[in-house]
Image (cartoon, rainbow, N blue to C red; front, side):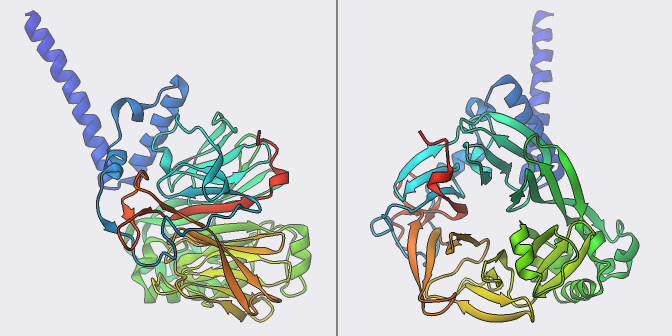
Length: 444
């Protein structure tokens, strides 16, 4: 009888383990994202409360696979290898997050001066840093899944929010502006004006409808979460562009907007461009909608579009307004592996004033711009390189690149991608932003 009891207990435990495995397989391998995201947040919550790390205890299949050596050629787009990559000390500190590593702060291409302890997070190589505060606090998010956090310089969680974050964010006056999203079934879930758009001809049960999530950066509380599609469709010009894109590309049905960047304009920027385009409030966001090849100036107070820039770029990222009054955009050139470019746009007539192009400058996805003290830094994400554009006068007159960083590593590096000669590991960059040294107060 004792043997039977033990056998029954063993079978019960085995069935529970099998159920967990099956649920994990379905949620991760089959990409049932709603299940996977929910479980991931619950597991992370348990780990945090009990100060444990299940990844260390039970292992992680993805991490084990990433440590295996596979000769995956990363392409011939790198400008550097491990030996000839840039070595000069940075003028500013560089906060960088590679695709396969944790966020670090660097003083030179070979010197890390700070790293954040993320041991309490599952799959912490997937944690993306979005903003660094002067005291060393970081806003981080789980890559394209649920979980937004503020941590201190030691990795302790200050607050957490169970919301989905998709891409790069902005912050102003203790408010975080975060691209988020919900998922709807097309055409069944369409309501109001959306029923009269070309989305009614889509057949997609898990279409991504982007939202603007606004959080309090002090405590993580939700201020608002605006569903963009229902608001934007009321604008006739936007609706016309949306209908055209849906008809020309059936992939748009799965991801009609793809909000990949939010920029909150400050009062100086408002005054600067109000001379070129009419603004209806002082609360304006610049939104980058990749699927529509569109950038919007969006009035957050009145929930209306003030200005649309469309089809001057393809699958773009990172629109930035400069103090010269022009809009600068990273043009991925429709996922082209051949070349990318930076376009300078006059908002008054939506014309391209000039462009920056260079030999062997190509990043089919992502790509980021940063203006800092009138310097323009370019992150070529796919190549894993960061350079500064130096011009004789205005952007882009007689310009050249000065490379500052390349993510080529020796064989210790946990990536399965190699340089063109299969000699060194290399990686993409998810985010690489410079911060002025005298404004960071936590470096010992």
